[in-house]
Length: 189
Ligand code: SF4
Image (cartoon, rainbow, N blue to C red; front, side, top):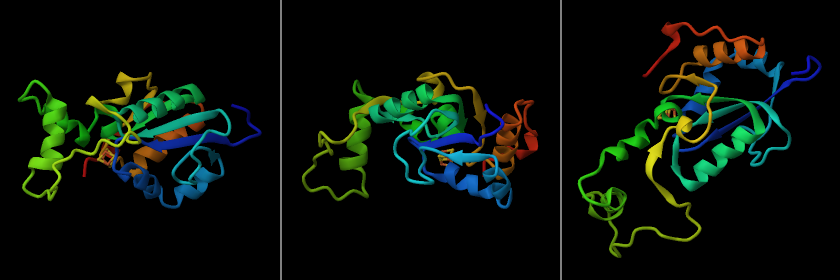
């Protein structure tokens, strides 16, 4: 990375809740310091939906639950030198991956969709139709962690990760070396 320019960072939320993006804000005033070193390319933070240039760091929230997630993740791998899986959903599939445990029938995905859109006592769906508009991305058979789809270089654990661990990781990477983080900064609350 040239010393003359800021590092380019891209972020995305796949099958996540945006809690990990909110956690970026938990860096508080250190975010101001960080902004002296980085500029954001494709990210929900600036609403840029495509890469404008190759990036140094890509930060991924969420795992892959549909084909669009897979394509976006592959696009990040192609356009970023370093990929970081941010939070448990990106690392393990997290909460959305709870559907992976539904396997009572021969068609677990169908069973899951019927529970979500028809059978649940909290659903009012008089047509009993499961959404199937062609514009909707195809749902995968399971929810996959990012590392099952592309090579992931670093993982930042937590749900959501603490601002401390995010800052510590980014600061180390921007300094050109990563020597791990303090386990006390790992949070699951
Ligand atoms: Fe949300 Fe937690 Fe998943 Fe982050 S790891 S996207 S905060 S559920």
